[in-house]
Image 1 (cartoon, rainbow, N blue to C red):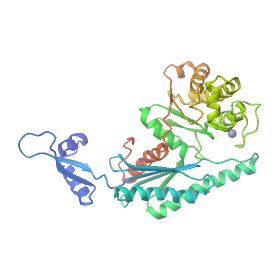
Image 2 (cartoon, rainbow, N blue to C red):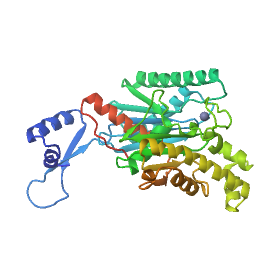
Image 3 (cartoon, rainbow, N blue to C red):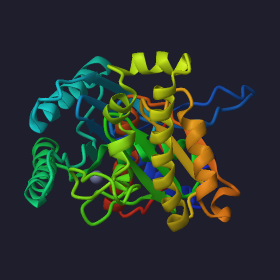
Image 4 (spheres, protein in one colour):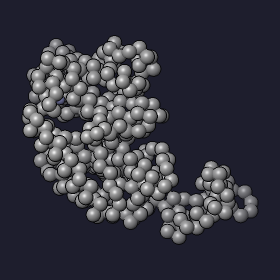
Length: 365
Ligand SMILES: [Zn+2]
């Protein structure tokens, strides 16, 4: 933007803009160059640029089997991102180190400056339930809380800025919804190894008392169904996760299941339809309660032939009419850095509130 544009956009005086730019230029946060776009005679006006080598926001996703990093400049442009697979047995602190190594790699390769970081957010996996009964539940929640605290402390010690820790699937929801939602209420469902999700209400990611809001995989869809490791009963995850669908279809892996769906194998089709129906049942409740108009569905099960069409069909049948009148159901891109980019959106909110500038409500992409 030119200085004239900045004055027009902000409604601030020329003198105020000039003083602000002088202060920002002293820290090398902005640079000015002659605007040669218009041509013409006379002295060209000056264009103000954000310094794109200074990192303002860092977003990290620490998944169960992969880590991803994205960094943005002061203008919210993503200036670097990377991801890699990681052994699922690796502990949370070692996975955090792996993410930091990715970050260091981006910084070194692109000559970026990390001393200017003002917002930092990390997505970690939700509680991992391993058995039934309250003891295992307590252990899972205690470990989940401890993991978050350790990650936050580890990063805070290195960067010296407050570090937000949220659920990684919900950060993916934030990233996916930032692209399509335009302020709508959105439900994001991820049907993969586990079933998770997130809900965005009035433009904000809902977190909840435990930070587990949006766990669509643990909505009961069968009151007489088996006990789930989460402590509930008949959960969506017990029918719709990759392992559940494979077991029901009698397939060894997703490739075999996809092949059998293409050849219209009855057992495979039934397993996928049942998964779609369970997911739709959970979503119907979300639609009625939160007045959601956009449903985004990702994960490997979502990409199976017939799943999404069946889900939408059942959802439109079950949910109240006012919910389905304007409803859109879309597949997500399943981009491997979406979780890290969603973390950037959250990092922006805290960077702005720390600076007292309020939410700019901008998205990163
Ligand atoms: Zn459950």
